[in-house]
Image (cartoon, rainbow, N blue to C red):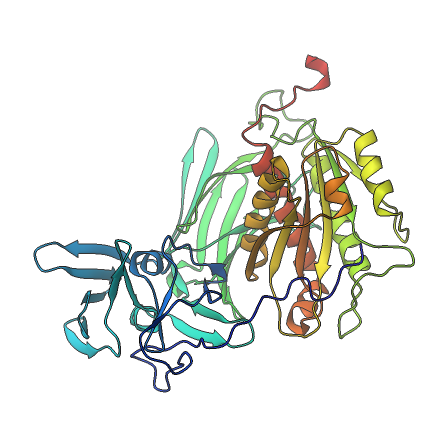
Length: 479
């Protein structure tokens, strides 16, 4: 579908920059006294929007945000001393104390002057963002084009361990703070399934952006349940990523039994049946939430319409076709039936795509695209549902959450639009914009096969999440 290049640009207002007490050359909002509500300032922490129940505030040119929201997003514990009114933040060996209306804070007992004091608004204490971020070991940056404050903190991996129980290995990874994770089986190593299914030897790959591996945790010998060892290393880049390779001795069945936004991950790994195994000897996994579902995949554009073209020549239609090809295999391995709305190199009109999904009685429709803008600055991932809302928006939210975690790009949120493929489909439908092909950095990522595989795996996980609350369709033999 041809989209206007300007559709994803954010509205820009004047008068906002970021500042704080610890910066050597503080970034300021437009010079003006008093308080100014920064209506379009976005705060991103490790690539994700900061969840705030009270909006940020500009005071004397400094941006203030709710203390608990930013502290917990950076992995700090928060405590309030009622008699003194002081608030304490602890992260590792760092202890920060500050109070509403006070122009002096302390870091490990050392006094630090604040350019503006914390304030209380709507029952929440708002603090200078750069002060708290840098005090907790984060870097704080400002994009004047995007009107976005970016706070980044890299957490150490605290634990890599395992427990053997009933012929299975439970692999545990704990990060030192909130960190998303992505688990995948490389395409060359996967058998008939991936995700919560099967992996043929040789490895399972776990990526944890904004995390690093200390030297003492780089090798864990296992030698049980088909798992030889776990090797870990830090991939340098933006952001740094902890990569764990689970080396396998034989095909295994695996699933995520614990995974949360606080940096905790537990995998359940068991030997998979092989030729010659006695029946029932190896554990098997129950049918997943996608078993029996019909999923319509819509690779955007095609035929005479290449879609958006990046500055390096990357064509949208080619990238999304590759993502759909991988995703189709993953879905079929989960027991889903997949309907693809166009063939490679073909481009039926939008109404025909929706009509095909309707005829096939699809349970969900996912249209896959790349974003583009008139300038090279915009970046990130966004997902659309129809303005009428309903289950399509729940699907869009599930896909967006997993794509942001899996791809590590800026979260531009779930938006609504009256696109034909969202309006004319009779099932929950969403349109994903994986990244900006007009952004040189993201175009480079989109050209990489690993990034495309991660996009496919993230959409798979989003579909699992969407259907998980629903009762799985029984296999045909049980109907």
